[in-house]
Length: 155
Image (cartoon, rainbow, N blue to C red; front, side, top):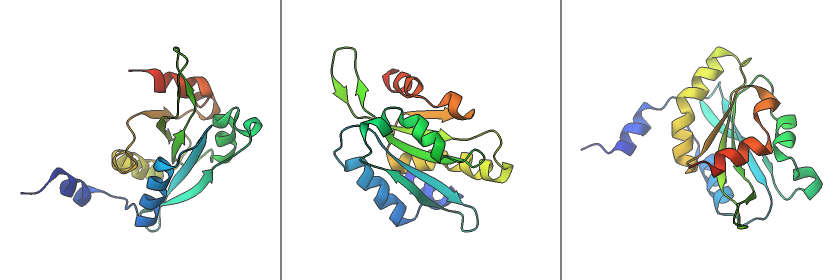
């Protein structure tokens, strides 16, 4: 009998190499305060994913508006998966650092990249082991602290 995981592996279009899986796992299990992110892109030539950049241990001034910092770093016309660990202040005073996947899919991206990106989203989400996804198609307008907090606080 074929497991659902084996079926998933046999139907994927884009490969996630072991070094990317290891980087995602390390990112997930690193204890941190504040905000951090890891950006992953699809390499069209090899049909595989690669870690593009990590945002770690930035000053409070730099990360006060992390989505703005990320937007400055993210390309306007190429999709990315961004795994974000974000300081979330709950209404009852608790502070947590949940993970959220930002599906950076700008409307001006080339169609073939968008197709690869869209077809790989669920697979990447499962490998990254993240439940919440924030879809961003309209650039900076869709990526701000309020949008991230609203998505994380939604049931």
